[in-house]
Length: 107
Image (cartoon, rainbow, N blue to C red):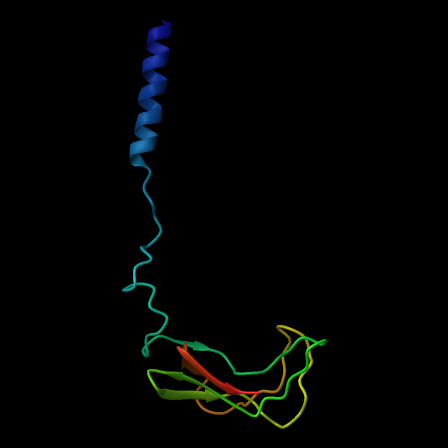
């Protein structure tokens, strides 16, 4: 009787283990290419800086493959709104933009 229970339990665990498979898609460059011009997301450029370390942005742009995507707001004002806080925004261009691969900024 004990042998039968052990065989059933081992068989059950084996079937469950073999039937489980990773349902996540692969993360190779083909499926997770964020720097793809065809793949776009809704985002707006803005600026932020820690309150203790204020900055002034003179000019800034985002680009992908040396192609302009968006400008970073640079109104000649001192920025100290805190990390991750919304600052000035330019609401121009397309709502959905590609993910940039380059940041050019003078501050």
